[in-house]
Image: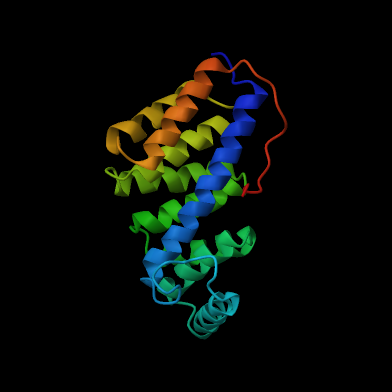
Length: 200
């Protein structure tokens, strides 16, 4: 099998970082029901609102280690802030309490993927796909995983991206999946090393 060129992996990681950040922000909005972000999460939202909610969740988790709901939301916030190791510890706690929560597994897998913990990310993302077969997210990030792992598997990545398009053909993830398929199809450019920092 022909291995992807470095450019492919670099661009893939950048797309992953951008979409991952968006996913975590949107995931937090869903969990909070728009309550602390005024229903919109606009850029002019006071920073201390998020800080206050973070502090409240930290207190809740410290008070009750079995509070999986607070742990999961706090993990999303930490991951969105780039505090990946802290997020992973909370995701581990939350998934032990809620092993069949597909959205939680997906968030956990994305955080692990961002941390480049590919084997652990694969476990979580495959479980998320089993639990959420009609949701495009797990398939998309499995495509990212196979593209970005230490020994990339271009064919497996393409198959997962194609599955995204089958599941949700009109979605933004389907558009991104098609972009990745097109890029993998060329694989003839060189570029910089991947970066884990989302681009604005």
